[in-house]
Image 1 (cartoon, rainbow, N blue to C red):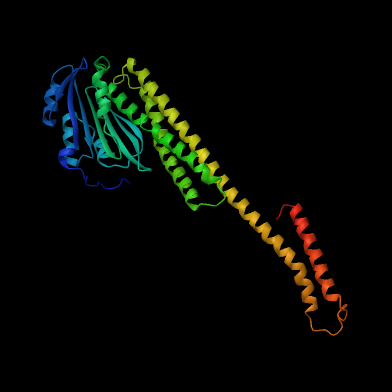
Image 2 (spheres, rainbow, N blue to C red):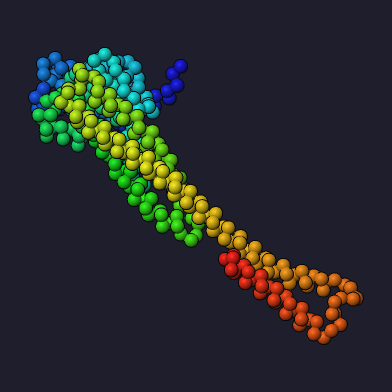
Length: 338
């Protein structure tokens, strides 16, 4: 049973769905931009490969990619339907990867996806949702043609490295915001917005961790497997990306623990403050209980009350009540209830 959500018509205009379509020679030199119809003509030539970047393509455009590169039907179906889990699949001599991306804009964390097709002579990236353009990664590759000469797999390394590097500032921003929230956590007054923001941060980091953790398995496979697509010279570069992913994952785990501790501390301080208020209320109630008890006795309508007929009885009762209240006050003061 296919539980994938139904295809959603992209909101991206057709003329913006193709971000780039560039041909390269095997020595890493750029041939130039080409049209989609010219892809097959370029691939007929020996020692060439093509790098195509798409953004939220429609079904017609994906079918065109399938026709030009011979992509698998299941991979094309996954690329058209967003909300895929992070994974890597092998289809013959090609790879299909799904990588989660994230962006922090205006204090709000948004997520997207990048679907990657890698073959011996092509690299196709399909972006959905929140994702920065991979033009900087492509320019970096073009500035190092000696490495781009290793093939499309070096472009794959640049894209993955670009995705992972963009995750580090997100974790750093969360850490800086938590440091600012610490002042509100230890403030005398309780702020509901502080607890809400701590919860939102913990939720975002949990979602971010679910996106980053599976990426370690993908990079690990690229380091160890697929010798027909990943040259040995590039495995050291993918190991570097793996180290970056590991560091991001560890930072996210540490941040989640800090947020959990911050929420617990905040709630403990709130509970402690409420207990202090209750102790003071109970202390004042105890001091009021003694005179209330004495006055309730003398407020009863009896003829024979102790010392009722004495002229000094009323002042004596007031003095007794004052001594009792003072004693209770001193006892509570020593116990730090007041």
